[in-house]
Amino acid sequence: MKRFIEGEDRKQATLLPECLDDFIAEDNPARIIDA
Image 1 (cartoon, helix red, strand yellow):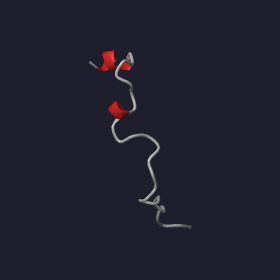
Image 2 (cartoon, rainbow, N blue to C red; image 1 turned 135 degrees about the horizontal axis):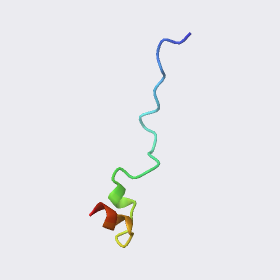
Image 3 (cartoon, helix red, strand yellow; image 1 turned 60 degrees about the vertical axis):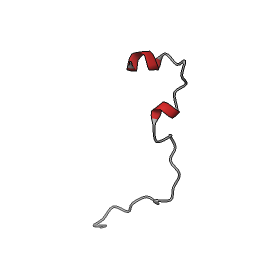
Image 4 (tube, rainbow, N blue to C red; image 1 turned 180 degrees about the vertical axis):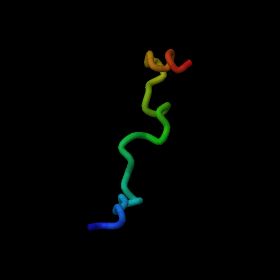
């Protein structure tokens, strides 16, 4: 039985951008909901 959970590689690239503003276009209706 393992005592510790093995972590992920810290050098792994992320799937999504760090900020969702970089992912959503300026004219996307989701920005209206956020406003």
